Length: 363
Image 1: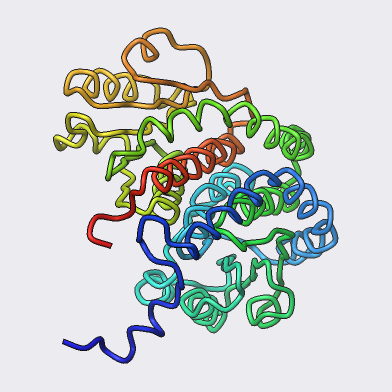
Image 2 (image 1 turned 90 degrees about the vertical axis):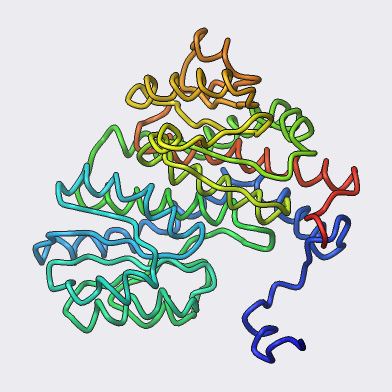
């Protein structure tokens, strides 16, 4: 059967899943360059956004906000899920990160003048994001575009816009972390908080320092997992969004299947199988108990678990194949920072698979 003529337009990505596809490996290398410059991108974004954040805070002050919605696709969706916690904390209203098409089709009809809706798209042209903001704006919501692309429809079409000073020539790394930082800064600008402002100022250096700490252990983990044709990630609350970003990097760079399970859902199915790599993201106190249960089960079934922890934890460390302790950070920024080791893991995994002549089976 010949391909549907619409296929080429719907699948515009030029690379393939072949073991040493040059287009994919070139993008893997561009991803490496961008992931090593995340502090710079975050710093530039926060510095240049200050006037726009002040203007947005003034607009929000002039109208009651009863809910915050952050719409996106792919990593942008997960960025919204992570940043939503800052709006809940600072504004004291419901806030959520939503999949843009789902929200446009099924939820936007409930938006109103009390809705503050952000739409995230690196290109500024993602149809689902534009549709989400169009529908919300038509119902009186305050609509804000968030994009890397000056002059794009998302930058120009709505009530306000925030510009991310990051590139996305590889698969998303700095574009995602800079976007999360910008949205957290927006929440802080609307309802100021000195401790969060201080944490944001320290974030660029902290991101680069974590990248340096994570590089070697994640290279080792990527090489160790390279012959696995499937990876799983898991976390609770905002760390499930971090897990989704990690799984996306494996699918993009790998290129193999990868999934992200909510931490509790690991315990409702026989999720991790013998030999399966699982990246367990549990750097906070709240999820520690259930993460310990996951580590116990993983060890019991012969799984290969990599744990990202927030402090030394001898019990979990004794049950997993490898672990990394993340430096202390503001709770609203830790899910952002936890994505950085996952970028390094995905890059190392992709390089190791290419060196071994491994692509997606049958590609």
